[in-house]
Amino acid sequence: MTASPVEPTSPLQIADYRRFWMARFLAVFATLSMVVLIGYQTYDVARADYGMSVRDAAFMLGLLGAAQFVPLFLLTPVAGVAADRFDRRRVVLFANVIDCGIALTLAFATAAETLSLPLLFGLAAAHGSARVFNGPALSAIAPNIVPPALLPKAIALSSIAWQVATVAGPAVGGFLFAHTPALPYFIAAGLLLVSGLLISTVRPVRAVHQGPPAHPLRQILDGFAFVRRERFLLGCITLDLFAVLLGGATAMLPVFARDILHVGPEGLGLMRGAPAAGAALVAAWLSWRPLANNVGVKMLWAVVVFGAATTAFALSRNFFLSMGILAVLGAADMISVFIRNSLVQLNTPDTMRGRVSAISGLAVSASNELGELQSGLAAAILGAAGAVAFGGVGAIVITAIWAWIFPELRKARTFAPTFLHEETGKEPAT
Image 1 (tube, rainbow, N blue to C red):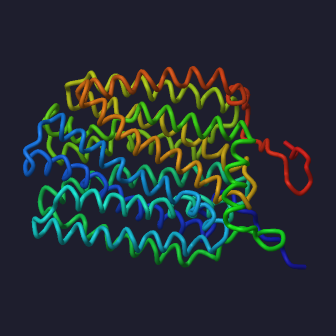
Image 2 (cartoon, one colour; image 1 turned 90 degrees about the horizontal axis):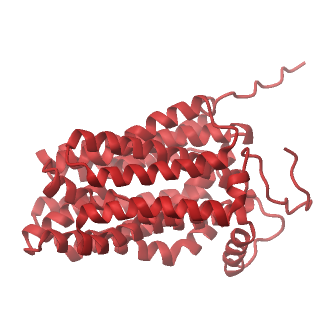
């Protein structure tokens, strides 16, 4: 008699997940170090080469966020269909190749000292185009390579990859940039190639459809209709959109590093990594002891703490205090992200995961990139510190409103799926 295979108790016991984890870590390490340095160089070029004031240069950071968001907005529906229609590994590899080209362009332009605002805006838009395809495909891979019971742990471990890379990438990139400005971009290009090779070794991942897939336009409309119909998913996605849109402080970090706290690119890398350090610690705890009860209320309170920490950061003028506040901000954000991602993934049928992940990714990107534009506009009126404080208070107000208009969020006790299965029309067993 053949012994039945032992069921894994951790996602890391699954070889495909280990390769997926490392590919995600390397890609985030590379792209985050690039994005932080693009922001610093944009602000520095605006101040040094274009002679802009602090407020005008801060507004350029807002425009940089808008440059990344426009392709995200236009291509998100297409990216969601691509993740549900094609091999998700190849979609991720396609995005990595684009980002690799961006990294090499930045490396050579930095070495030749030929950077300009139009070039930086153009490369930021190209990165936004790559990211819109990477996000939905990568997010939809994990549920296909781990059992559903291990998915919350897989999401927590994946968040560790993201957060540790978010700490290390900007910090290492900032120190390398201070020594040899072009070097971090060359390293990022190499890491993106390795990440692409790793993801290509994961077994083929494509959504399973009953019968021939619908027309791409029909699939796009079905994805938006599903999210609109499922108020629970709609509440989760839009809470992140509006709360982080107002509460994001990262766009103003170059201003704090250069002109408020006076810590330069090295300090910018550390500040950018501080939220991720707090988030990584929480993610490690969640991978060991995942949240299981009253998850909706905990998500809402986490966003409130995120907003309060954002306001406190705006008021701080001590670098080490600011670092501590940013770590608390990241820890609170990690709790919210973990709960939201688990709820969204487990409450979405696999045939819809690419499109729903794309819509969720659009909301996240809108909250980040449009949040940068909002911060830039607010900074032009209120100053950088005033803009960040305004956003933190706004995030708290938004959370209170969402708790009222989406009672489904408050009532979510566990991660048990709530959607109706298309095949049976019955509520899944809990």
